[in-house]
Length: 295
Ligand SMILES: [Zn+2]
Image (cartoon, rainbow, N blue to C red):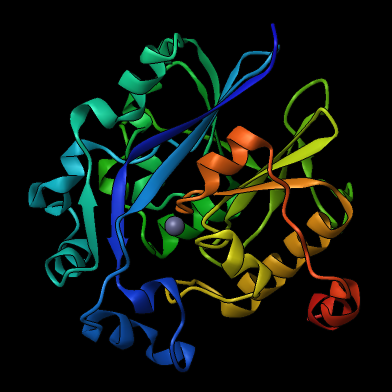
């Protein structure tokens, strides 16, 4: 079976501009976001399906049409408040959910072998219900962190059977990443920790045909933000988010990398054309990795 990668857009989300880009000190970011009257353009909510010889791997499950209705949030009063305050503007039609879109591409959701969640924010996990048969994969830090201190996850909408395999990375370096975990037996798909955006955010690297496809989740909203090491306003840990972005830049400075964040309007075109990211020279010198890594 030839390897194929599908970009699947499950509707759009518009966020406050102060949500996309941190304004002012991190301590006041929530006030900045909620008081900000301006929104981004509607951004894609992307998931990725890899038709792999070892079985289909889905990366994130996208958003559901139900989330466009206020009742979806009624089970979580804090989230309900944030949505009433205009945190997100979601637009998802039922036919845009990941299940119908997989079927349209000839992949039955029941046949998906593994679902890797980059993190548990609702626009990555709300499509879980379509995959009761798959092995669901989340970093231990993300799962336990979101249960202890929910940040952007809508746990009351997780399916009752949601009991993911929790990932602990191994001390196996992958480029500048000190820790990683091979996902496939062939070793061509690996998970790397890219925390900061959420408790235990992770990214997926698929190495194929001399390229690295870097499924970055929400490590950055788009490629430019990664290149500028610009942290988003919604960010669990600003220092970790900056460090993760620098590791990604270092990875992409030595490996030809197609960078695929979940909300970048250009991600689909980059995948279709195998467009690799160009990291400005001098990244290794300016990254300050050793200092930050020692913290
Ligand atoms: Zn997120």
